[in-house]
Length: 155
Image 1 (cartoon, rainbow, N blue to C red):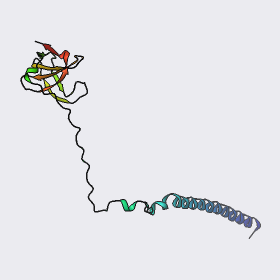
Image 2: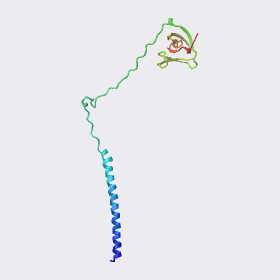
Image 3: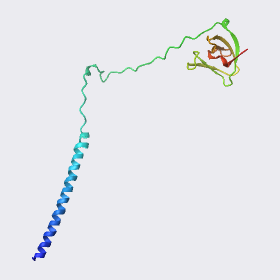
Image 4: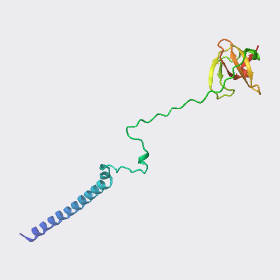
């Protein structure tokens, strides 16, 4: 072999070796990154966590015990005022065209107990001290409840 051919072969070998080292380094880094990813993020999720230990395990119900369902009673209804027929203060008519809602107490947020239509005849049985609310009985259905006094025309 001639000297230039020998030099040319060495250059090829050096070039191949250089590219092999770079390739080996890149592959090694990729394998190291993959291994770190596996060990740090994926492998811990393949093993289920240890069962927790509680200090009050003797206080728990057995697995076959039937757990009672809590039952809540509705709040007690307020005592309703039931008047005698002789306690009627005056007669009136409903003046609101859409009718009125009868309430259980003389306040806006109290429970609804019924309703009365427009122009129905009612008997006013009781008034609040400030005369803002009146307790009425609907003459046709005998329903009773509180309404605002401005919604009733006096006969």
